[in-house]
Image (cartoon, rainbow, N blue to C red; front, side, top):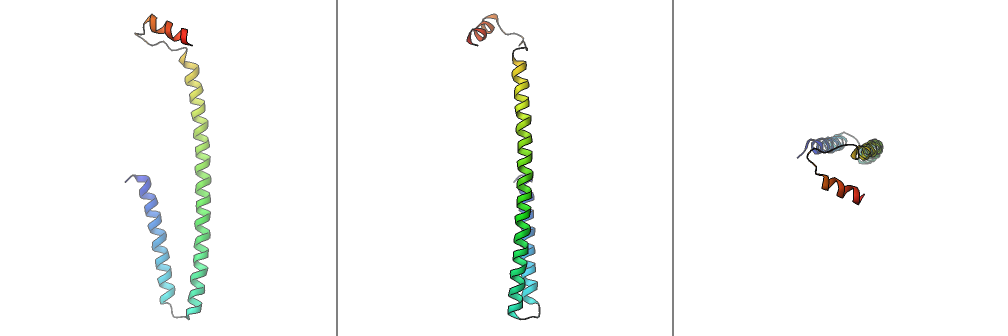
Length: 104
C-alpha cells in the first residue's frame, strides 16, 4: 500500500466513523422517532453537500495541477528537441552520424 492510498483510506474511515457515530448519537437520543428520522435526513443531506463540495474542490485542484504539468512537459520536450541537434555524443562513429543525417 502506498502513502497516497493510505491517506484516502484514512479519510474514508474518518468519514464512515463520523457517520456511524452521528447516527448512533441520534438514535440513542431521547426524542421521538419522527424527530430522529428528520435529524438523520438533515445530517445526511448536510454531509452529502460537504462531500460533493470537497470532491469538486479536489477535482479542480487536480485539473489545475495536471494542466501545469502538461505545460511543463511540453516546454521540456521543446527544449530537448532544440538540443538534440546541438549535442555531440562521444564515441559516435562517422557512419552513424552520416546515416542519421541521410535519414533526417
